[in-house]
Amino acid sequence: MTDAIVPAKPFRLTGWHVLAMFGAMFGVMLAVNILFVFLALKTFSGETDHAYINGLKFNETLAANARQTELGWTMSLGLERPTGGGAVLEARLRDHNNQPLRGALLKGTIGRTTGANEDQELTFSETAPGVYRAVIDQVRPGRWKFSASAKLEGAPQFSTETTLSLR
Image (cartoon, rainbow, N blue to C red; front, side, top):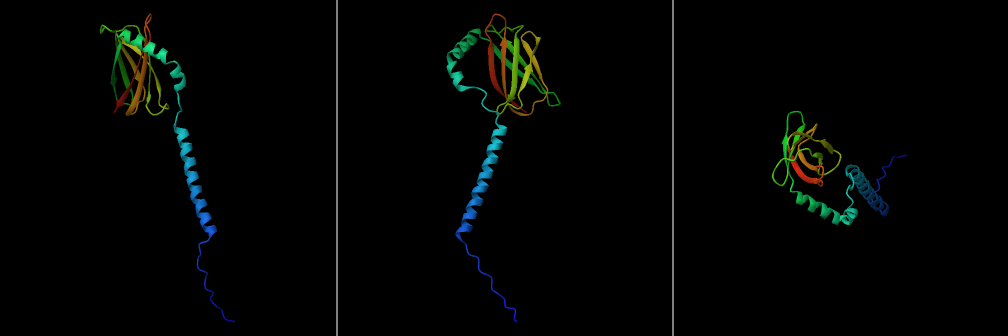
């Protein structure tokens, strides 16, 4: 007996091969899309304001803004960044005659403009007439959204919102 070498069959692309390649391609696309959806839902905090309800209360919002404009109150902000990653936020409240507003109850929040996971409630205390200070334990560099409301007995609530850029 002689050992004969049988030539190998050349590769031939068939319909099953093409079907398997398309299936693998769509499988990879599906896996990547599922990953993106999972990451998007994990990192997005969701809608906190309800546009429909805010639209229904639009006239109330306009009236509150008109009352606030009549008050003529202003707030200026200052920020100190001591070492250690924290900060001291100073708010100065003035009335329409540019006089300091004493005895106001000032509440505030600071958080990232992109999500709610770093939001911090701020506790303000009056350190001088019309000067209110809040200590922030940890605040990283970047863009932050600051919102505050001040209430003085017998006066409508004053609200403000601004964006801060910290280094």
